[in-house]
Image 1 (tube, rainbow, N blue to C red):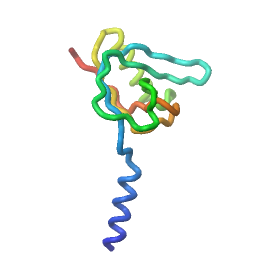
Image 2: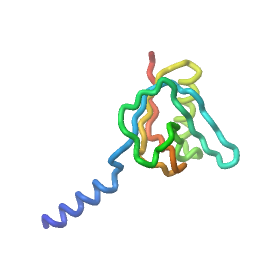
Image 3: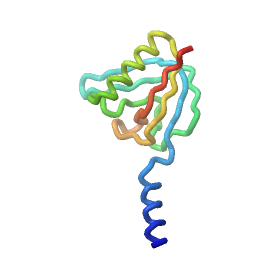
Image 4: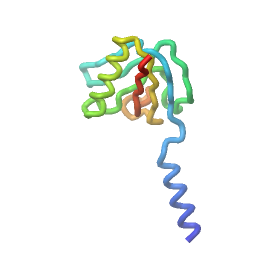
Length: 113
């Protein structure tokens, strides 16, 4: 019984990303590529709050599924933040599934001030 419990806990922990990035800054650029629909962006005056996963060797952030409803909301938030000069915090997924060297975005937070 205890061995099964420990095995289940191990599987749950190993399924979750242990390292997910978190950065704060202002939107520097948003890039949308026609050839494959890729949407990614960079931050300026970036402060890296937590370490990104090893796969995220570049400083850009990737919208994981640009065809999803969530991606539409995230892209809208990013554009609004860029136009208004608002600071954002980006929380990562801890993975680089959309593009091999940029972390997938999990959450976009736009600050009022």
